[in-house]
Length: 471
Ligand code: SAM
Image 1 (cartoon, rainbow, N blue to C red):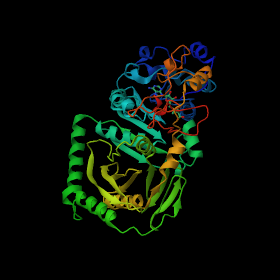
Image 2: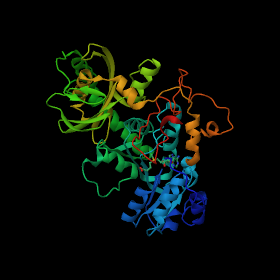
Image 3: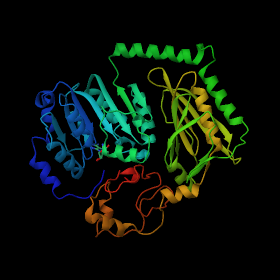
Image 4: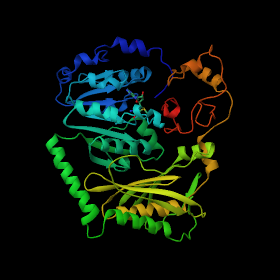
């Protein structure tokens, strides 16, 4: 989160050393005692602090610690917290990179990750708060029943997190692809969440529990193995692989004889009468099939990259070890062009199966029971085949590539914004002016210093911006 520089922020944070803890490592193993609580919750990346302060007010019997590395933002959060009863609260205005030194093993009950920065470029994946590098630290810090609860608007970050937690052997306890469709008065709305809700975008939420001791893990593996065996071989309805393959092949071979009746600015598509449409935004749609929701997201970054740089379109599922079944192939779209697809099924909580279909233009994600999962993948392929995308409109909406010097603009920005993301050097007045932004593989540059896959994932922000991919 980046916002205008506040001259009062640094002094204000220093003026409140009892609340803004400068050396959290000194308090490790004493947080419960110091905050007078038996349960401790920590929010990493608190931003302006709406969630942390509202939840602490709603749950005064619990200890609440907010962590935010940007001091201008942290100061706003601290101001809010100090305006309410806060004996059971504390704040750490530092980068959570070192979180494992701030708490004792097993000291935390819940870690909240709310609308974390997506860091879309794969080179920066390690900075994502749901990267394995962080998950290993959370695992140590959480107690036996400890949980990580994530909310995000960003489907790519959500997909990444589902895979990453699964690879690290966490248990997925709850998952929702439209959390706010039903009222959840027990869970406060964050600043970012409110913005996305106002835009009608779905909120993704998942809860993971850390793995239990070895014996339980072993039992779980046995259960999972039995479950997989059942899915893969013993089912009276045939193997999961076979059913997924059949559903995808069948959906790819059907004659497409429809015209798109859902026309949007960037693309259009057709859905069969049995599929309901829950809501949609410029780039996302939530559908319902047999009471199960699924999402269709436009692959904006890939489209821009391919269009600008002639990059080869890669259609691959997130790299993980937990796909129960995968089917890859090609279909002809409504315009007669051949497109690749990859469909995958992954075990989720409560005997549910996560279904994902990737095509060059769209990523579909949904949950289903095991029986219905292959058919859902087939339904996703059918919609993808009817869709046409206006690539020029996507480019116009999401990329502003002109080879002008962005340095002057950045210099102006530097006047009143915090330099960050390693761009300070480029913004320095005495730095020899160079006439382009980031050099991407193609050598092309963007006027705003971002590269194509660092798209404004949290759009529509005024004073708050995600670092997005520009870093
Ligand atoms: N949670 C708030 C909300 O939902 O409105 C803010 C979301 S904002 C997109 C993400 C925040 O996480 C930013 O303020 C950023 O500075 C903070 N952040 C990102 N990585 C962090 C880290 N490693 N340690 C502490 N804060 C971090």
